[in-house]
Image 1: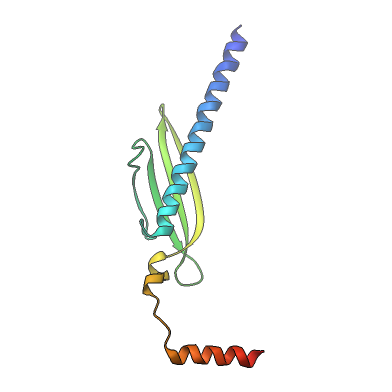
Image 2: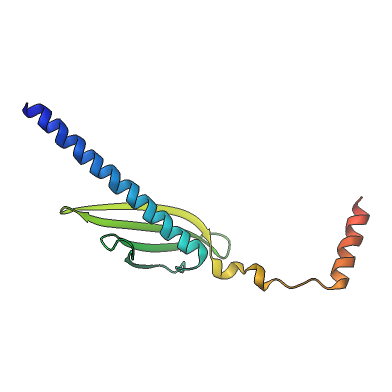
Length: 124
């Protein structure tokens, strides 16, 4: 009977840990999406989640080869019944502040259009 009780305890612990991994993964992915969208800058930061204040986050970035390319690392953590839990997610991200947007695009001049058309006809 004691062995069965212990197996139930172990199963419960593993289930709780799985829930932490799922929740932590979703929160880390959401924070990384905020970095990609420019809501959180690639220069980094830290805080707690508005939707789940028990979880905290940090964002760190390291510049990589090409200008504007960063390796962004998001760490989420939570104190789970006195035991620290941490999950880390890293991804290469272009700095959205340096990428520009479609709203910044300029309409090509008539000369640009004609030059492009002439180049296309010459290539055929």
